[in-house]
Image (cartoon, rainbow, N blue to C red):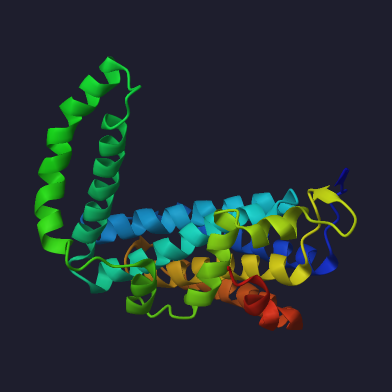
Length: 264
């Protein structure tokens, strides 16, 4: 028997989402006044910042719909993007490293398709036409980075984001639908549940991580893009004030969350 549950938002999460909506308003206004650099690394850094802002909006919308644990995949991507944004400005090889990761993924995808016995001939021909261009990009980058592959944990450490390591484990659990995440979402006391209520400490830490990523990205973009006189300082100060209010409302149980949600 499956028990559907009516979505009820607690006062704590209502307050956290009200603050998050305020942050969304401020960052959208900031983006509206922004002029992006025309060259790398500033250009991709600006693209990452705007993607982080869009992902933050996705987190807020999912939370308002009662699907906060499903927003974890967006928070995970936000954190990865913040690390990339930082490393683009401090590591001259990071643009090429991102290109390498892209080429590796594309080559792996093509290789797996070509190994399929049921692949239609038209698709096989299309991939064989695209593979030379992929290899042209992949080969020199592979020679450069094959012995210096960077894990996500190493990227966080290089970007001075060590605090993310245990939280990232939790976010990966939600993103990959591990047994702990499935149990939290659907294992009720007497029956399986659909759209189960999320404990405040879980919902809050997901929102806090999303806001933290947004604040870090915004702080970085202040020295990268151009803004109207005084616009960045005004908007960022307002965002910092809202961030402070969010941290002041943090539930005590959040401190225990990492041990409760550590993936097996």
